Amino acid sequence: MDYIHGLYRFGSRLGLARPRRLLAALGDPHLGLRVVHVAGTNGKGSVAAMVASILRAAGYRTGLYISPYVVDFRERISVDGEHIAPDEVAELTFGALAPAAERLAAKHGEDGQVTEFEFVTALGLLHFARRAVDYLVCEVGLGGRFDATNVIDRPLVSVITPVGLDHTDRLGPTLADIAAEKAGIIKRSAPVVSGPQDPEALQVIAAAARQRACPLYLAGADRARPGAPAGTPGRLLSGRAVLRKASLQGQVIDFTGPGGVQERGLRLPLLGPHQVANAATALTAVCVLREWGHAPDVGSGALREGLARTVWPGRFEVFGEDPPVVVDGAHNPPGARALAETLRELLPGRRLVMVLGLLADKDAPAFLAELLPPALPEVGRVVCCRPDNPRALPAAELAALVSRRCPGLPVEEADSPGAALELACSRAGPGGAVCVAGSLYQVQEAREAAARLTAGGTGEAGVEPSTECGEGAGP
Image (cartoon, rainbow, N blue to C red; front, side, top):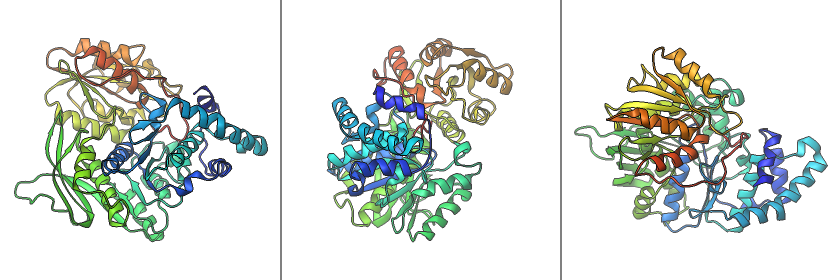
């Protein structure tokens, strides 16, 4: 791990030349993989986890590549839910990748030096090839067009989850700019599934699909309406989920999708209205796979079981009851907006203490505008902390931004996410609730602290906190 994380010093450099050279030196292991490629600003990890869980439930050996990790680096590379073993990481690193990477650096100089994300992506692709997975569900790190995962030239399905304003310094200042980067994963004649999009983003995605002769399937969600028949698709939706029930214990949805699929009463463990849309996107992607002659064993049972067994830590994860502690990885304005909506829906009337920690390169004012009064009037106090990441915004600077936005709102600072959560729990009071948000890089410590401070939850000890700030470090 020291070797891999040592590559962090080479920073983040988008581009495909370096990862292509590295993979070529390894024998191009990715060329034989059958891939579902997932990009987007928000929800891409949740969608990838759902798709992988459904394919596993259908009996397929399924690889899952994600970034960044929450608890353990090895989460990034898993087969059938089992993380890559430490000895496999070491063997692939020192037996194959490091020698190849060092030869390329010696030959091409600075232009040949791979970044941490490029190295880990190649490591994952080599591992999946050696494990002979039936399918690989691959989450993009940053953007899409020049992301290291875009060495995948022939995906079975390209999936784009909601596009929002994030990483504008790298991807461009407008939704159209960012959507164009995400649409870079669309490859000729391969079907495309899009989650709910702003019209500006959808126009770009649809144009890219037309230019590359790709059929476009739209997925989305709706609430149940009195008198509306279950599973009736919207006029333009290929896949549609309807929310039937929501509580802190989970959600129940109906789904209508490509190929005449109609499923009622699907259990969705991930919470929030945005996860209903994510489920619609994931289910549509799997239905498209089957409709195009792949994954024929995906039936009703696999859809039902796979969705119900989806695990995705740090996404509106609830610990305890008095007070309930929500740990969420929302880190940009669209994510904050979705979090606020879920808090209002599932914790109505609760006085909220927010624990916030952000990275310095995020749009903090826009993020705070979604999670503080007047947008979320239930917030009565904020505790600021500094996530364990070199790019983190100091707690004092964040506290100043909060006070500037909401004069009179009590704001405190703490040395770490764990200390901040402990302070917040002591301030919650009867009938209150605590929510941690702002960065996935504080989720690990927050989960551990929440599990320790409450009687519930599934927090577990981690390995080492991620320090990645390369192409894959979206949050």
